[in-house]
Image (cartoon, rainbow, N blue to C red):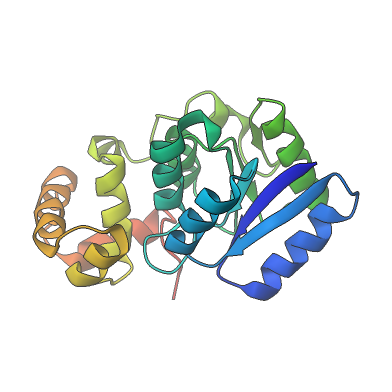
Length: 212
């Protein structure tokens, strides 16, 4: 039996995933979470075989969840991304952080089942609507300037571009406001940006944040 943790901020969506995944009797959902902190707590409690997470979560988001779980549990933390986002840059970042695969919500239901099986067998999976080359070149960004950002800086960039305040970012990432402010200055320098509006425009252009 494959034990799963589902992470998505919509309870109805999680219920649908659970029905899909448990229908053949080979998988069991042992926990559900709607945010990063709850997901980390449930992962520690249940030690699932695999965590399936969306990227759009309240606060710090799915990339931060991947980073935290991989940092705390190493290779024991298997993760899949199941998200409406299909930006190549987000796919690459998720794979760099250690995700075993990336399935878009536009995919056929059987793609998620196949992704779970592939991940549990030690492989990696991308849904058919994503370029297969992303599995082989995860470090190459569509915007060269983004290569200069660390994973932490990239996550802070996304939060700030979405309109989060420095205090919001600090709370979401368990950092001090001063640390986030310092990161913001470095991010702007690396990307050659001077305003928050420019950060938001760049993020929108590359599909890194949802369109309002």
